[in-house]
Each structure stands twice: as C-alpha cells, then as structure tokens.
Image 1: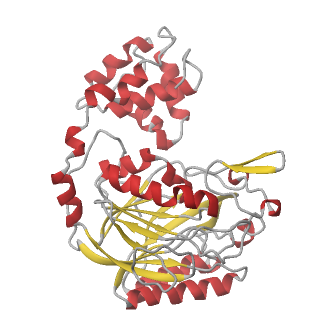
Image 2: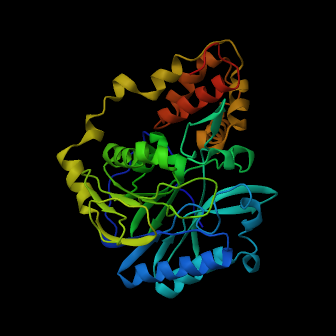
Image 3: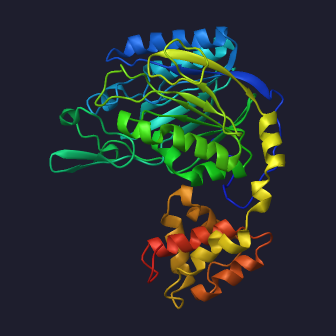
Amino acid sequence: MANTRGNFSFTALQPLELPTISKFKIGLCQLSVSVDKNQNLIHAHNSIKFAAEKGARLVVLPEMWNCPYSNDYFAKYAENFEEKDASPSFSMLSEAALSLGITIVGGSMPECDSGKLFNTCCVFGADGKLKAKHRKVIWSKIIRYGFDFIDVDGKSQENYEKEDIEESDIFTAGDRPTMVDTEMGCIGVGICHDIRFPELAMLYRAKGAHLICYPGAFNISTGELLWELVQRARAADNQLFVATCSPSRESNGSYMIWGHSTLVGPVLKILALVTLTGEITATSGHEETVVVAEIDYSAIQLQREHIPVQNQRRGDVYKFIRLAVGCIGHLGSPFSSVLNACARMPAFLEGKQVQAKVVQLGYGKCGDVSQAKRVFDEILEPDASCWAAMVACYAQNGYAEEKY
C-alpha cells in the first residue's frame, strides 16, 4: 500500500498524464447515517451497489458514513483496520470493491490505532485491496462566545446546546497528504476541513492528480456560505476535478449537515449536484440519494492548454523561499539546531525529509544558519520547498526572531 508518490513539493510539477481510463462515471453516495452501525453498513453497501449498477467505476462515500458525527459514538464505533475480523466497515468496503470490480473512496470512519483515534479515509482497488489510507490533517474547532456559537471551520449547527465538538480533543491529526494511483487516474484525498486549505490541493496538482475527493460533513451555516465556493476554488486554481460527498441532512449526530454532494470540473461548471430525486441537474439538495456523473479528463488538458496558469505563475515574485528567508533571525545559531528542529516536525511539513537529506549529503555540521542557503544551492537540482520547510521548522521551534 502506498499513500504518496514520494516527497511532496510545490515546485516539482509533474506533467499531466492521462490514465488508461480517462472517461468514466463516478458515484457519490449521500447517505443517511443512523445510530445502528450494522444498518449503516448494509445501507452503504446497497448504495455502492446501486451506483455500480448505474455504471460508476469509482464510488465515493461521505465523512463518517458508519457513525453519527458525535462525541458519543466515535470511540464506540472505531475500528482497528489491522484486525480484519473486528473491522466490519473496513471489510465491507473491501468486499464490495472486489465483488463489483470498482474503486471505492471510502468516505471516512473512526479508526483506532495504538490507543489513538483518527478520522480516516480508506481507498480500495477493484481487487479489494487497500490502496491508500488518508487521516484527516486539519481539525475543526467550535468556539463559544457567551450564549452564541461561532463556527470557525465547518462544524456548528442550529441546535447549539446539544454538544460542543472539539475534534482535536478526540482525534489525532494525520501528518501527510495522500495520493493514490488507480485505474481512474491519480486521486488526491482530503477530509472535510482539509478542503479549506489550498496548499493541500496545490500539492496534489503538482504531483499529477486528476481528481481530488473530499468526503465532508459541513453544517448548514458554513455549508451554505462555503461548501460550493471552496470546491469551485480548488477546481479552478488547480484545473482539475473535485468531488465531495456528504451525509444527508436527516443523519443522526450533533448538528444538522448541509449535504449537497457535488462534482466540479476544471472549467468551473458544476457537473453534478445531489438533488431530491437523484437526477443530475443544477439544483442542489440535501436528501439521501446517489448521484452518478461522468468525468472526462480531457477537460483538464483542454483547460490547461487554454489558460496555462502554471506557466504564467511568477515564481520570481512570490516564491515561498523568499518568504522563508525573511524569517531568519538568529543567523549565528548552529545549523545543527535547524536540523534537530526539522527532525521533530510532522512529515507533512517535510522537515524529516530535509533533515535526512542534509545529513545524507554530509552537511550535518555545516556551521551557522547563514550557510544554509549555500547548502541547498549545492544540492543537485535543489528543491526550494525543502529550504522553505527547513526555515519554517526553524521559525516554529523558536529559533527565529520573527515567525510567519
């Protein structure tokens, strides 16, 4: 199982390569989630089968499709995916992918691993094998001010007194992006709040993604304001397809869900919205249904040729390296302290890769931080993101006078 295509960076742009299957149907299963886990599994299996019978080669499930979105259920419904006999949700997805001969982006489920809980998306190939596993990177937070709740990310609701959800108190965040090669092209994965951050989508675009799937469960207020907006932004900025899949509004849980599972193309046309009848129209909806729509990756190529934003990007004006260099404070600090800082950073920030690469090349004791730029200049085909990540680690660990 491979979660990524090597080290990620914004600068190492991969040319677009069309997969063998570049035109296919995708199914988005907007499910009603109940407190009965077994019923949720049966319901999800039937929806996956329905989508496959309608011609879908790729099927996407919602965030927390087997579990109500509530603190009361996350730990209770969590599964250790390494223990197949005790992971009915994991096993169902694997068996469904194999029996139907399709690829499944399995929404997300609560995963327990080494005493920690994760909000995890599993991707299964047509052979039933796990191809990738993405753990939600960014956690949402609800802040209370007096008698009002202000949602700062995507998880508030009308019935505020029911429950405050502080996801970071429950789940452990993932520390890496996830891309997976499938018969239907290269797919990047994010979960819910991950969609709010353009950097993750930029990484996926740079590494050759054709499609980004975001299982999510935005609430009504944030959903109305941002759900469609951020999807179209990610698709437009990166000139690729974006698919989102949400639970339906009548799902059990701690807040009312927006719904509106959507497929957006690179030309900013909304290709499919979930409607009350499940038809593919321009009318949005929130009820339980399955929508099947067509993806044609030739639209990516056409759009990038028509508006070559990647070639037009002014790296000389707004390279991340320029921002990073301005953050260096104590240039007399030992460079070894920078490497130590890098080694302590999450893999998502590339710090560990930077530290390992520098040590491997024999620059582990190169002197002061002022020599760091020279180090990376001397590395064959230097990657500016490595330098930026190193300085970011340096700043975030308190070695700089100024943080960004």
